[in-house]
Image 1 (cartoon, rainbow, N blue to C red):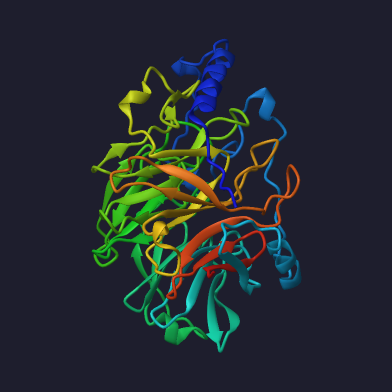
Image 2: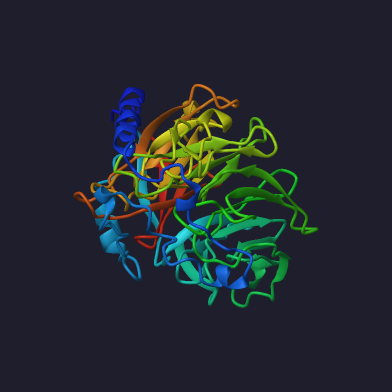
Length: 423
């Protein structure tokens, strides 16, 4: 299979130039009086985000676009297996259904004894998938939560991020039929639902990296948002490690350097082709990645740049394309895939909604050195987009299995896939 390169630099540069021409006549692009004001000093702000947090600030071209509602309970195993026949992978790789009936599946985490824990978007559940001699049993172990998309596992305990707090469930694998009462390990978190869902990543010291999105598409972020924090769940201490981050729901620690890398969803409502979603790496404490002033490293926001130059901010390691919606990501550290895949990054792209013709809905492979140089991306797995504006699946997270294969969660199909290699 011939892999497709992503986002050609010349085409991207021409698109930026064209967009500037289009924005030149917009009124109030640099006038402070035209900027929205969000008063986050009152508790009601977090309980009831502004009505235009998701919409607003759209160009005429983008009006009328809206997210497509997914299957409420996912797809049947037969439907999923039929859709998997259309998935394209490099030669020697195979994809199969690992488990179905995992409604709205998002981030995954392995327990010490081989239990696969799965968070969920929108339905308030956390699942555990147990292997019984090759047959997968999906157990709903937590219900009634706000939005438990992010979870992690360490030293026998399951950690779940539920919008405004991080919970710790001790001895989780031995308690699947009746989970213990959780301990709140961190709650210095906004209560808003808008861009409030989380992704958890442990570093080697046992601290959690967590991103905090602003509660709107574009605007001046309230304090405590548009940032990445590093949190010690043992003490509740935290530090802000990055600023200027819009919506990040995926990240991993580089096994080569110990640095935290993360995906970022760019702002909506400018055009079908701009701005690009990003792959970033934190190289120093407190660096700023541009939001809301600058997008994709070279595109000042037409309204919120306010005199700032893109050179003031940390550029992305790689621009992934507009509205591909990169979510979960992992460095490949297994031994099953060929040697050239070692330490490559695999990104689950959820796919477009804010675009007239969808793109993304892939697994993208990124080859890059530990310093973030010489990054190159190719499509590793594709085929989940049907027609111009429909899906047969939407990858949400990736995780490595003990045998070196890769699992992919899909919140659209309500499924977990397994990608393996064998000649």
